[in-house]
Amino acid sequence: MAKKQKKVLQFEWEGVNQKRVTSGGEIEAPTLSQARALLRQKGVRVTKIKRKAKPLFSGSKTVKAQDISFASRQMATMIGAGIPIAQTMRAIGNGHENAAMEKLMMDLSRDVESGTALSVALSKYPIHFNRLFTSLTEAGEESGKLDTMLDRVATYNEKLEAIKSKVKSAMMYPTIVLFIAAIVSVLLLLFVIPQFEKLFEDFGAQLPTLTQTIVNMSKWMQSNWYIGLGVIIVAAVAFAYTYKRSSKLQFTMDRIFIRLPIFGVILKKSALARFSRTLAIIFSAGVPLVDGMSTVGAATGNRVYQKAVEDVKSDISTGRSLESAMVSTKVFPNMMLQMVASGEESGELEVMLDKVADFYEREVDDAVEALSSLIEPLMIVLLGGIIGTMVLAMYMPIFKMAAVF
Image (cartoon, rainbow, N blue to C red; front, side, top):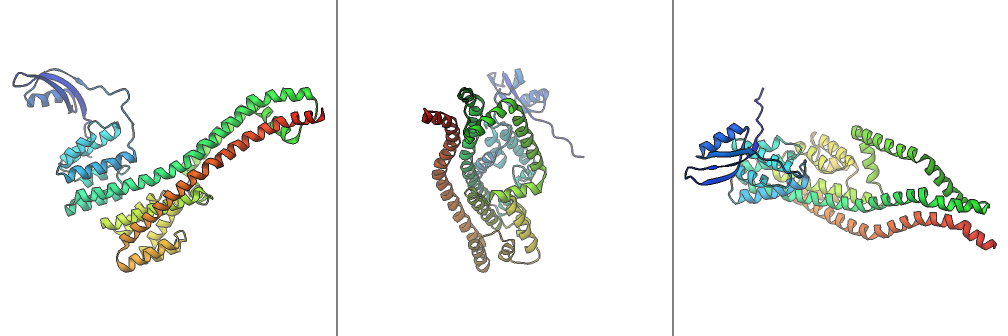
């Protein structure tokens, strides 16, 4: 059994060096006694030492994809400038606002300092560095062009994160507006409609159908709001629990999403752009196609395309061409199939896939821009329609009474 690595702690110290000059600073060591010993080796007589306290707000506890993308670019730049890998990792980690990212970089620097290859050190953290990242790093180490490969994977990560961000921003606005519409509707039913209800009782006349429906909804909400809230919470928790554990439900939901009238187009083109970009960089890294297809599937971000990629992987492992295997799935557009076929025939598949990725990334940009200009009036109409219907229902009896008198 491998020996468990000791946790490294940070200590603040003050002391006197060999030249009798008072100084201070920070040092890392597994224990307080080892910290003192390290300082003695440096010729420092410690007068005060204590463990460094963690700040109250120490930053995020998780490593985000954006952190990895930015770190990849920093690694490429610093290694290209001739800075040793371990020193590069330590420099990136030191002072990082994300505490988890700082720890990750420090762990990697210690692994590299102990003689471990960078690609091997990265492979210990598959959550943050996937197979594609480690394969490109290994290819860079073998070819002596580590900085070039890291620059390439940094560019890939940045483009992937950019397209994810655009898709999220496209979905965020309507989600917020619908949530606000639901809250406003509930508040109207609970607090505004009851005031009109008292007024209608004084009229003693039969209410219009729309008004009576709204009043009945308000009465139910007032007496059973906790039931409605409980049902919503239970349904949300049950759905989340089932969704997390059911691959069939996840596949079904992803298939529904890509078939939506407006948002589905963005999701579909986003998945195609990720597929093309990831497959292109796998070819550039020299990773065997069959081995790299699982990474390609995960990068699409959609389980419909992930399943299609697995089918493609199964087909090409039997000797079929990539274009022929993609045709069988019936989820890839003709333009992409033609480009892949041309790439296979000309031996420039990587170039063709990059062009396809560029095309679909532009398509996503255009679709998000069009959606942004379209969604605002649509949401205003929706929100206005919900609130306007309730207001109209409340004033219909008043208009009716005014017509009588």
